[in-house]
Image (cartoon, rainbow, N blue to C red; front, side, top):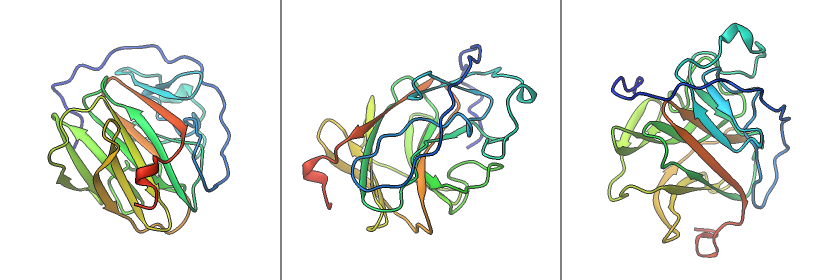
Length: 210
């Protein structure tokens, strides 16, 4: 699960990022932006805070603010909405990347590690053209998922579940049991291409309380 040396990520210039503050937890549909304060220096965020681009050269780590929220070793960024109750649903366009992780993480996850490495994050990962569940640095293959261009994530906080959703059929592909100890935030890791987030969406009716 180190970087795929066979990939050739695009070179790009890190533009100025917008300042995004943390959002309080809530029930209902989630609307979030990517929190530039948490973004590793190899990740470039759009001005609207909805897309992530991996840059091979990135920006000199000494040129970005060394605030405690920022991931220092791994190409990770968190969303700015902390969730502590309810069901929430968002989608991610993944067709422009060949190596990434998406899911949720504790708000106070260590900035020295990567999502999927410990029991403070719960993620679905894509690498070498295969999907996996990843928890505490252990991976489990996900079968019969195909090659989706866009996927959904359904968080059921009280139910302690995080599900990967087939956006077209609006059915659950895989559900991961979780052990939340406090508020969690959307979490993303990227080593190739681009991810685009879509939030502010209602939980699909047929997936409510599923």
